[in-house]
Image (cartoon, rainbow, N blue to C red; front, side, top):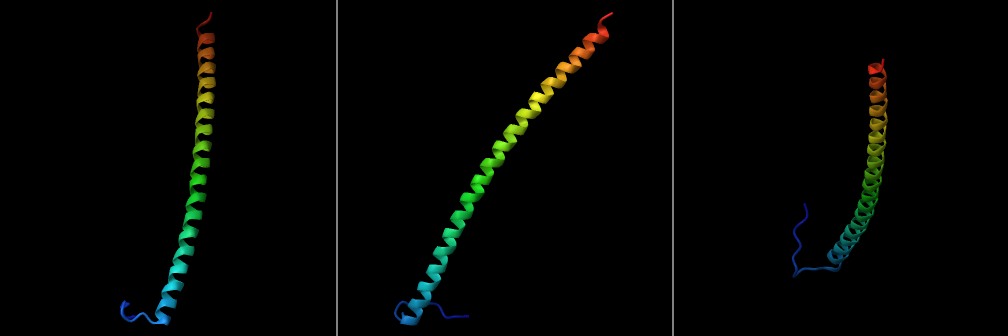
Length: 78
């Protein structure tokens, strides 16, 4: 385990290590932002697909209800 950083003893090696860690953190942050953007696009695409499928289901239900009503009317007719 490394000793905590002491602001009075900031050697060039410690500064370089901190700079490298900061660079890695910044790169990771950029990667996470890109991932988040891609995931948000995927969520939007899936929501649109869901809405389309729900509309198709509603249309199919209406057609089925019409067929059922027509069959029921034909059964009631003499």
